[in-house]
Each structure stands twice: as structure tokens, then as C-alpha cells.
Length: 395
Image (cartoon, rainbow, N blue to C red):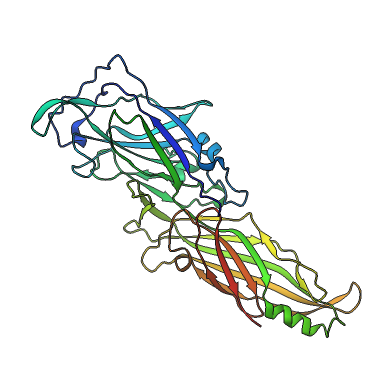
């Protein structure tokens, strides 16, 4: 199995004394923070690399994030200061960094204004002294200013800066599937201090992807049926795929909480139950699937993956409705034929039954074509390779 694509962002930390910080994130009002940089002051520096040096597969949904797109879009960082306390032990707010934009300038990651590690006076185990203070970092990509471009449309809002609790962002499906942006999240870097020389951000896919590859194959019963119609090969019979559509009904909006335990922390939004429709039309153009003479091959399309938010709201389950039309041609001469049979089998797939609504998963849809209907089964794999759905039926 090909490893999942994971993006590593390293926060190289050799900071000096703190810049100005509000104590709103901390329960320690006597932290004595200083904003006077020491002589060894060093700015935050970023580096980025993809795990296993792999680029995104060509079989992908529109705008699937890879390293080039990450460098083009940048990412947003939230950081909470908790003084001498660890994250979760006190109320937190993202006051140290709030949706801080980090951009790539062709050689390095940059941002402004530069921040420095906080240290200050405080009491630990009954002893007053100067101690490093804790910071916790969370991140997402692509960066959104909540108004501009496709990222601004797909990420239209986020938790207020002064809101107590874990930072979050709202994600919604784009009105145009071609402009849908892939969403990445990072495993939080909690309770870091000046002593942490390197803080690696590891980005992963927050969405799931359905239909990254769709394959149609006649099942054994269909092939046997065509052979029986041929009269032992006396008459050539062909199975042709003439049309195929997959219609998705998908959750339109979800809340992604940036604190997580390594898995995407999705939540439904109160009062939001809208569904978005995605219609994918394929063009098989009388594709030859099988003939009694042994001609033909599977039909495959690798270009129409659909991103979706891996949650449903109430009983509004996310579905994919597959509709096929095929014809059986009976040849009356070397190049003449009549249409012996036409049928349009269909199936409705409930995505939660197959993916379990796990982020970072990808479906391939495998359809085994019978005479009258399509039934589906599936297994689940990481984003690379994809989830396989095997749909079978008999005449």
C-alpha cells in the first residue's frame, strides 16, 4: 500500500525572551513576562517537506493539496499561551497567534510580526524564579482570510480570538466543484517551551474523497449471458456502456476543531443541515465492455473525485447515486448491428456505510454490471491508495 501523503512543517525554535503577551490565556496573572529580547534572539523559521517525497497522485479530486499548492497557499497558525500551566489545565485563547498567515517566499517560510518564546518570573513547586512558559500551536491549510478567493469561500469563519476554548474553523463546500479546496489540519503541538529546538507540524487530509477512480466491469453472469446469446460464437454480441452519472448528496458545512488527537475533529453545526448536490457526468461514448468474441475491457475514469466533509447531520446521510445505461448489440453482418437490449440499472450508496466518515480516506468505485441493478460493497484504506467499492449483481 502506498503511504498516505503527509506534509511536515517544522517550526525551528531558538527564541529569546517574549514579545508582548496578554495574560488572558493564562491563569497566572503574576507571570512577569518581559518583552526585552535577549542577545541570542532568533526569529521563527519554517521548513516544509512531504513524507516519502511523494507528490499527489494524478488520480485526484480538483485542487488536491500537494507541496507545491501548500507553498502557494500558505497555512494559518493558532497559538495559545498558558504561562506555567499546561494546555487543558487552564482556560485557553489563541492570543499568542491568531490565524497567523505563514507564506513561502521561494526559499523559506515567513510571517510577520515575528514572535519570541515567553519566559518570566513565577512560582513552581513553591520556588520563585524565571521559568520558560508554555505555548501550544495548532494549524490548518490552505490559509484563509475568510473573504478572498476559493479558500476564503470554503473557510468563511473561525473561532473569535477572545473565545475561550479550542480554536476551530468552519468549512463549506464550494458552489463550483472545480474550485473546491482540499483542507489540511495539523496534529497539535502542545506545551512547548524555549527548550524545544524543533516543533514539527504534520499536516493531514481533513476531508474524504469519493470517486477518485470509477471502474465498470461486466460480472460473470453478464458475460455468460452474452456467450449464450451468441449461439456458441455464431453471432457476435457486444455489451456497450452508453451513459453513466453519479449524483452525490453531501453535507454542506462542518466545524473542524483544531485540537485533535491525531484524527480530524469534525463537529456538526447547530442549525446547519443543508445538503449540497454534486452531479458527475461521465462520457463512455458506447464504450465496449465485453463481446462474445473476447473483445473489450473495463471502463475506467480517474478524473472526477469529489471532496466531502466526513460527518452527517441528524438523518441527512451523505449518498452517492450511481446510474448506468448499457446496450447489448447483436451483429447482423460484419459491420451492421441491431440493439438487442437496453437497460439502466442504478444503486444508492450511503457513504457512512462504506467510509465510516473517516477523514483522509479515498474511494475508488468499482461497478460490476449485471442485467437489472447494482449492489455495492466496500473496504476502506488510507488516502493512497483509495477505498475500493465492489458492486455486483446477476442477470
